[in-house]
Length: 178
Image 1 (tube, rainbow, N blue to C red):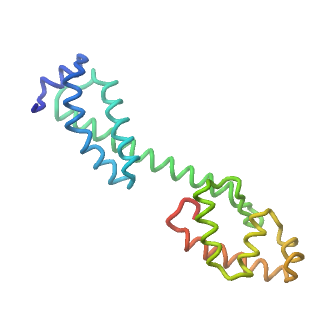
Image 2: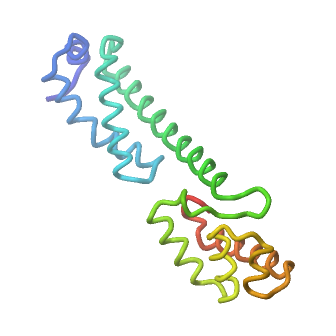
Image 3: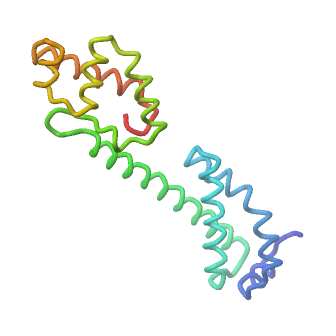
């Protein structure tokens, strides 16, 4: 079925059959459009679905096919950008929760299982002494506790932690908490 302005008027009146045709025609392209922003097929599909729902809920404001397509893609773009903003805010919040202002203490309780696994693998790539320091830090040891535990100077602990954080950021730069 070739969609025309008269079909948009039918959708505005609540014609579900015509909306199904509209949905089937534009849903795949909305998924592709959203994917350009969010880089996740599942998230893009969710955004396309939410876009269609919002379109249906606001169907009375539609007047033409061109107007409807523009409106549809504007909704998808805004939802995609909102998704990215939410992820950025969530990441920032997570990072703030993970890093203690004074010593950079990372708290494992805020990490999801997958993120813990990624972090653990990254830590295992560090030199052995540095691994021990980071593992103790993850167990909420303070620098002074680490110096006693490993029998090293506090400056060594601070230096190795600083290097470890830098290396971990490099290793995890494509992940949520880097």
